[in-house]
Image (cartoon, rainbow, N blue to C red; front, side):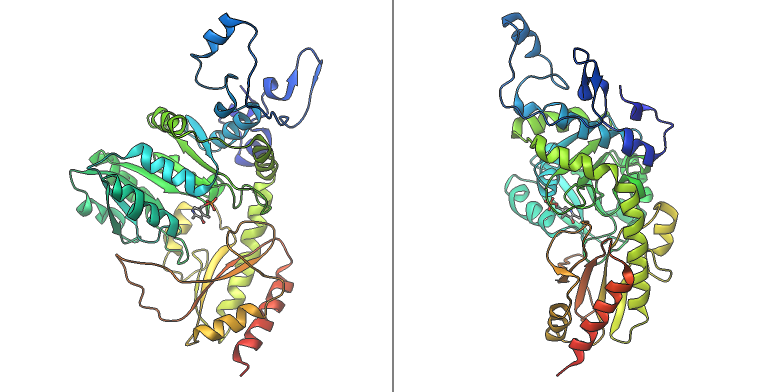
Length: 400
Ligand SMILES: *Cc1c(COP(=O)(O)O)cnc(C)c1O
């Protein structure tokens, strides 16, 4: 029991208290405790005697058994993440966000099953569906992210899972998640959400009817661009299935990386607020520029996803996109190459701003906007400096 088990605590308080159980932060023989759960590195666990070994062989969770099953550092992170989702029974940790998504899909689907996958899903999620999942006899249909309750028309007797990601990767469409989860529950279909953009701070997934919620902790939870990890947090009904699959697949994470993730988690609330504010400042400035076609940011009024975002989300993160009106791809390259405060790089959610050219893949809902797309991850710099940098980029774009 940690203080974060108190359901009445606000999210920011839970981030601070989460996972700091007395049995993970102190030892009664030492007469005190430390603030952070120490890093317990282990492969071998030692037993007192054979009776002890036999007894613990039957324990499945939160008992030292073998390194792959985790140590208190790992459990502390999982516990803190579970505490962030009302209605969650537990969290499993994976070596990356992609590993978490793949493990969740494998755990929830079987040969002959049909999966409804959102067309705006993260590209490696699509690759897993079209690759290994297809080879193992699961068929995937991609659906329009804006489908809402009409998803009912796509459900067949074989449909077992609807996968959501909102806002969508690269194009930031906002899904009507409550409408979709209502249909899914009525029809006995499971739902899984990639909640990396919002985190439970901005969108508590299970409270909106989702059965399994995933995060790439690599992004905002880690927050410092120096560690990779993924998580699945599940309802009581789904938790045993996910845990059993994770054990069979041998998914394990490093306690050192868990300590980094725990450190990031403590400041997630303040960082998200600043990422959101800075991102809005930059997005609003971009929207007024003549070089910009569309700004893809659901936090802005007039964005097609703004109404549903305002209804369901508690704020915005710092990741969004924009198009360069009537520009050639080479102009986009000149724009990006001229930036100096924005690093050119994949991933996002760190304290430093990043930029990448993006080229979305869509099969259910073809994009008919030919303008080149840019994705920005707005960090914790002063937006005045970021805007000056972007202005330099526009100058280089129009140069011969
Ligand atoms: C980055 C990302 C992932 C994958 O996470 P990794 O930790 O990089 O494997 C999954 N989903 C979304 C939306 C992402 O942006």
